[in-house]
Image 1 (cartoon, helix red, strand yellow):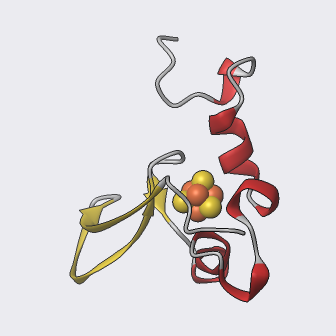
Image 2: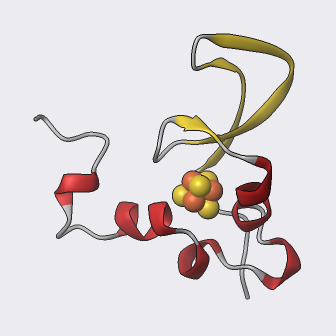
Length: 73
Ligand code: SF4
């Protein structure tokens, strides 16, 4: 069963902006989640973050460091 993405966070500021209400933030891409993708992040409508989000897959793949936001390069 799909669950809310473990990479999903809520922040009130980022991308050089701040908001009164916390917005969905992806810790993989280090950016706010677009409204349409938020349905995937929250596993709504039977969507599954692990299967339906390309960023999630990149973060879970130890062999693909080119997409890693924590890379030293
Ligand atoms: S964009 Fe993808 S990796 Fe980021 S929180 Fe949403 S489902 Fe997870």
